Length: 94
Length: 268
Image (cartoon, rainbow over all chains, first blue to last red; front, side, top):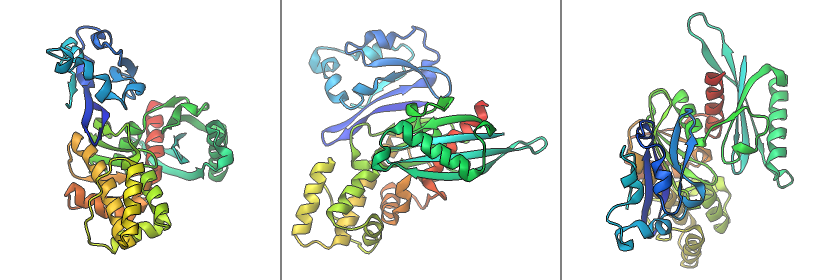
């Protein structure tokens, strides 16, 4: 399943997409939870009893602000979460 | 054997029972009894509301509590249902229930009181992809309700009024609060109520459609949730999606509870 966490508002479309099928084959256990400087990722048991990554509820409404530091303007060449996820499950819409 | 699905929504509690029919070689599930319970102010405590709705539904169905093998809760308040053995997200429950009612459905659009979401579903009702708007109520029923109050129309009249308009008035505000101010400006400009109603419902449909586009629109499209009862919104959504038809289930507000009951039957 691809789970899109986020929102669209007047300033743009802010979604983090997690391909949970790729999560299941995660070669580096829970690397996303350790890579995010804001500690936005968590591992949940989804409705199909799979252990998958998700964005914590508290951050889902503030992605535009929470992720800003990791964008190129913050000095990062690539997103820490997407780079840590070697399975390629994490994508940002902006 | 019976299973129950209880959908603790933002505005109401819905309960569905399913009875498993023993058909040799092919177990089937039959619709059970449906019962809704609106949360009145005195029932704002969700624990009390869940218990009351479930007890009333059991009485209506003529079922003893022990006859129900498994209860699965869903909805925004699903974790408040203490007597449920399990809970599932409204995304999974909505997709499961919608595909059960309309097996050809691949895109499920769920617009309830507080949230709208787009779901891409597999033929077995499992979720392939979903997107919701975590931030804003502007793509949900509460927004339409708030705007109908501003126009001093009942929700029913609001939906019907929009059908009398063919005008397209764009609403720029992304936020319910600012949109209300836009509606007030339109009222002061003597814009007919039916045109304003259509503008509001077009705006809700546009936001919901943006979520559906994130997951990809694949026909058939089915709309679930309380907004199915608003014919103006259904027309606006059909136009925004650009599809020939949008399937509308009977008793759309119960689809989430039905999905939870189906999942309960599968777990049991």
